[in-house]
Image 1 (cartoon, rainbow, N blue to C red):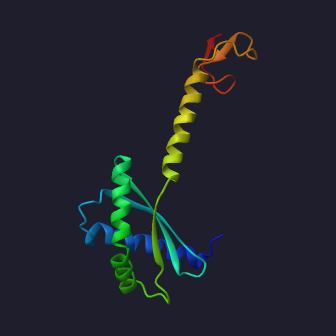
Image 2 (image 1 turned 180 degrees about the horizontal axis):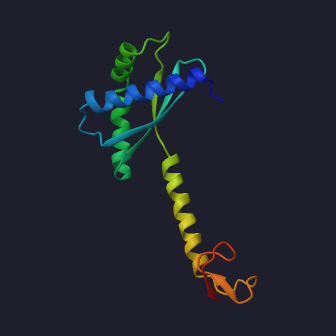
Image 3 (image 1 turned 135 degrees about the vertical axis):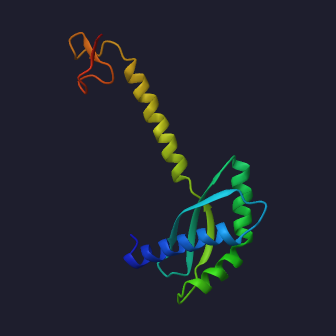
Length: 142
C-alpha cells in the first residue's frame, strides 16, 4: 500500500515526465505516448513509469526503446525540476491495464448481446425482457 507521500511524489513525477516527453524530447522513434501512472518504490530510489502508445505494437516497442534511451536525460531534467533527496531511476513499462479494461468491456458487451438474444429463460412465465429477464420493464414474449 502506497503512503500519501508516495502517491504525491508519483503524481508529481507523472506530470513532470509527461511534460518533458511532450515538450522536450524530439526522437523520431516516439509515437503518441501517454504516461498513465508512476509507481515510486518505498525508498524513493526507483520508479516504474507506465505508458501507453497510440498505434500498433511495433510503435509501442519503438517508443519504449526511445524512452529507455532518453532515460538519463529525462532523469536529469526531473532532478532539476523536483527537489528530492534521491532522483528515482526510471523504468519505462507498457501499461497493460488499459488494454485489459478494453478487453473486459468487450467481453461484457458480448455477454449483453448474447443475453438480448436469449429465448425462453424459463423463469418469466413466457415473457422475457428485451435486455435481461426481470431487470427491466420492457418485455417481449419468449
